[in-house]
Amino acid sequence: MNNKNFERIPNILSDIPSLPVVASRILQIIADDTSSLEELKKVISLDQSFSSRLLKIANSPYYRRGRTINDITSATMLIGFNTIKALVFAASLKDICRISNDTDRLLWEHSMGVSIGATVIASDTALVASGEPIIYGLLHDIGKVIITRAMRDKYVEVINIVREQNTSFTEAERKVLGFDHCAVGEYVANLWNLPANLSFVIANHHREDLLETLKDAELKKMMFIVKAADVLCSELQIGMIHTTSLTEDEWNFLKLANPKKRESISEKIEDEYPHYKDFILGQGHSQ
Image 1 (cartoon, rainbow, N blue to C red):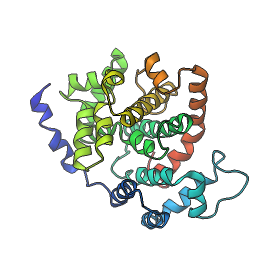
Image 2 (cartoon, one colour):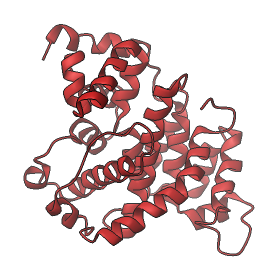
Image 3 (spheres, rainbow, N blue to C red):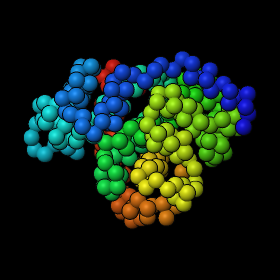
């Protein structure tokens, strides 16, 4: 690793704002098992657009069951308390990710796709609660977003190497920058004081030894849900895609060894992606 370049990470992050107030409040609610719907409503009220966008999702074909949803309480009952917490968290981060060109858009769209994919996988496999995977999926590649903000031209070099040489992002990043997006992502996670498990997934989601070495059962499930969502979204060509795969043993671990089951999950991701994308980016955000 080029230590001189790696030392630039604090400089790269020097213009990164603190974690938005809404996102910070949502993390507090997630950490508190006794948190209530009323507390969540107070957070939602900090951004007037959240309510209308949540109702739009509640009335989408995926959730709607023959009736119109007109209030946040009903929407929460339908979508789920955990899922709404995660959606509001995701939407609150949009200003951190300056979407000013196709590269920015593709990076962010892939993260949104993985967040949706992780949610669908969690719901279908019942391995973990359905709320937190949205956050894990959305932030797994936060390092890429931060690097491209600060070193746009250099990251174009990285992307070109990935495309031309069919190599991984981490390998191309180390070649061009001297460090990778996992290291930057871990730095951001620490800066924002994100939960330890989330920080671990951000820092280690490209490791190939985790099926054998990761001992924490719940963290292991979340890690492979994110990795699987990453694979499926790349296959669906959502956002900035890259070559990635899981082994048969890893698919088995997720109870997704059957290709037809994975195909069903992919179809759900395709169905829900536009709705979640619209909510997370919000109206008036450049795309």
